[in-house]
Amino acid sequence: MQTKVLTRCFPLKTITAPQTALPANSQRIMHWLAEAQQRPVQFTDTQTEAMSRLLPLLLCGEQSAQLVFNTEIQRLATEQHSLRACLQAVEADEHRHDIALQHVALSLSSRPEFTQVQRKAKRFYAHLGRVDSYSEHFVRIAILDTCVTHIMQAFEHCDLGDEHRFSQLCGLIKKDEAKHVYVSRKHAIALGATLNQFSHQHEYVVGDLMTLLQTQGDAFESMGVCLDRLNQKLEAKWR
Ligand SMILES: [Fe+2]
Ligand SMILES: [Fe+2]
Image 1 (cartoon, rainbow, N blue to C red):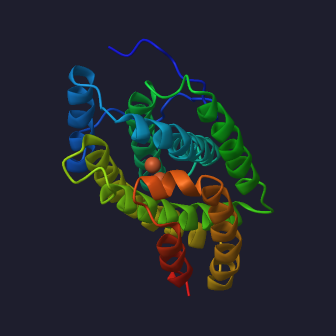
Image 2 (cartoon, protein in one colour):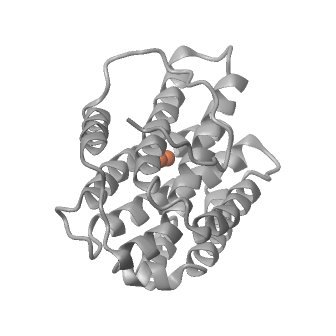
């Protein structure tokens, strides 16, 4: 069982979703977690070095997303049930991603670079939340979720190989994130977002995210994740 607790980037709120049957992909993540409790995910020394710089970037994003969705669900407490249920499902997904990535991070978090990168990531995500309107916030979240989908896909096919359990986890998270893009985009539009807002914010979010990722460029490279290719893919989106 997991006993050590990692320092969080953002506080954990009580999950708002009622206990219902889990979708297939969520069940797969729970299964992944149950296996990981028995058989910890392992890395070579070089991979450990790289992952201790990369995992805080991913983990902080999951924790930030949980908080964003939790806050929005509270704000919309009197709104229609179906909208809140959609947002609650995303919040619950992010929570599962957080727990699974924390599990991977446990063996890496005592390294000093883990905390250093965590601080950088926290600044990026906090900055992302400084917006003038709720619609702008969800435009940014939709764009960020698109980016996370591509990042997870890159890790799914990184040098660890398809059989590595971290690659497999990233493949599962990727599927959820693609769903989140749809929910966040739809919610942003319902809040009044325009297509112009998407293309304007796209430049800002992708630019800032790439600046953050490039601070760990050598770690991405050593895992076989090409940031230039990622940037090209992201620049082509929302155009
Ligand atoms: Fe996530
Ligand atoms: Fe997400």
